[in-house]
Amino acid sequence: MAKAADGRVLIVAALVNPTGPDQGLESVTILNTTPKTIDLKGWALADRNKNRVPLSGVINAGQAVMVKLPSKGIELSNDGGIITLLDNKGLKVHGVSYTSQDASKEGWTIVF
Image 1 (cartoon, rainbow, N blue to C red):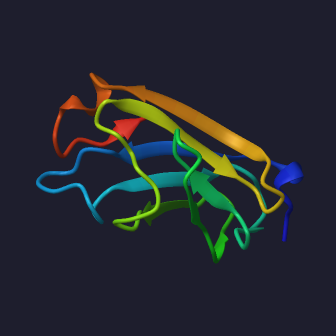
Image 2 (image 1 turned 30 degrees about the horizontal axis):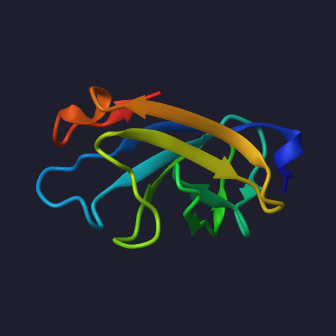
């Protein structure tokens, strides 16, 4: 298995304003652009307030994984925000930002 330093895992999309209540329906999609499987144990997604949700499992080479966010812990604001992917050492692997205009369409996924 590869380590984070061996390649890149990217945040490629997020559903920050789902149809109806947001809690428990928001998601972030990550993509392993490397030719190796990466163990996500100890990795996390963080919001603009540095709240974190832990990741687990593996992401295979070339695979995209949609991470459903829990109703508590991490907040993807409809007023715009930042999403950060952290490795098992707490180091930033990738980060994206979005605006309130990006999040204004209920039920639409933002592609980064």
